[in-house]
Length: 321
Image (cartoon, rainbow, N blue to C red; front, side, top):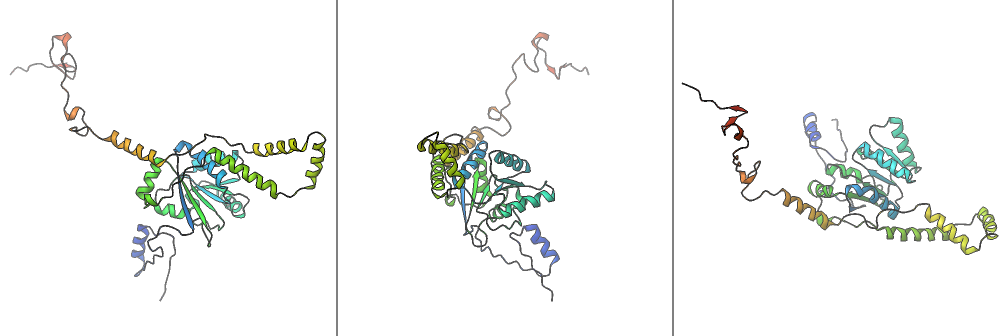
């Protein structure tokens, strides 16, 4: 007797129906046990307007400093635009989408796997079959349409017993979509505020202090220092060097970014109130469903021609029997 097995992350309904037609007494084994949450993956949500997502993403990168990450976008145009934006800010980034040539896609995957590139901006073409075990973070710049797509995306991290973090930046409409179609309990969502500009600057200074303390002295630096001491005192030299390091990546943007959950709820309530029809009105009609009466001199009445009725621009004439 010949046995066959198919191992997949998800089994859509059309594939299940096809299997029942072509296979003899197929057996479906579900190892998920009804659990959507991955024990090795922390799922975190941030709320922001669509126009603020670029700044929100950059602020999260500056605050979290992920080791290796994938950013998922909805379309190839979004991938190319975000890739250009991050590259212009000196982030080590590559991209991956379905319209790239096979050689270009293989190169992007290769340099991302090797660590030459630390950030991959991709569409869902990278959500399935990409097995790189050291991805620390997955960013959902846009939310996928289905819960299965979300599961495949965040499954790129937390592999081989490692811990991972899945971060979703939700616009108000995407927050409603997640609650409606992704089987997410609102009370269990880990929604956090985006870090402020002051918090990022403080962290940047702490990281610089640690870097200076742990840095081993290079012989060339000693030669440069001795030359500088002939022109400046040691305090001014240190101050100028730190200023150079801090100005290499100058932070910008508003002090606070993102939205609060109360703002989204209020926005939803306003939409419901604006869509509510007045009491007694009927769909498709104004004025409570009653057609307004025509006034004399407008529409079918014409004062200049003796107040006779007109229909379609032609005078009504009596037909003689």
